[in-house]
Length: 119
Length: 115
Image (cartoon, rainbow over all chains, first blue to last red):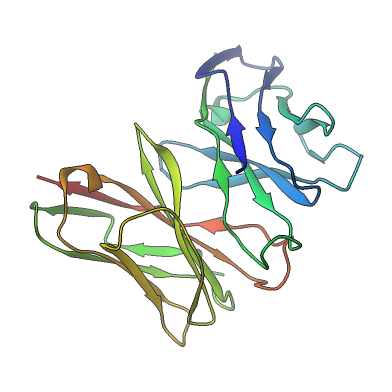
């Protein structure tokens, strides 16, 4: 079974600084997708960034980028130029690719990292 | 385009009762997934529906059930409520059931409290 681990329950960063959130996962599959979701107090899960396992290039979305180390099964999120609006719970998630048991939108989530942004 | 809509936003029920939660996906989306979020267990997958068929199911007892209608709207039902069912229930929709690269779009959730 696949697992996702986020070892940092809480993190804090100063406004305009950079912070990195850690995520490791365990799987025997070679085809999968990885995601970072943000959950602000409004409760809605918002997709931040995603990475296909077959792509070696790290995904980037504006101030958000990932460091995807497939061999190490590591998928960290870097937030540059942190803003007050970045304060939220961040979840790392795994989804199997289509070669294992058919199509699925089942996500396996980590336990989350609560990010505080200090002004 | 309207986002994923979940109703109601808050529910208070008594142990032993049953409850039905509703989810309207983004227009055109055919896949709907349900997740339970609790402080103790985190986010756990309940089930997924695609074109009115349950495609995947998580490790939850049979008291948890769901269905999807022809317009892709989905409902989940929990019978014989227990205190441990108190949670935030999140619904997510996806546009391409046969493509694995389509992201999930989540609703704001339904907060269920069982007393």
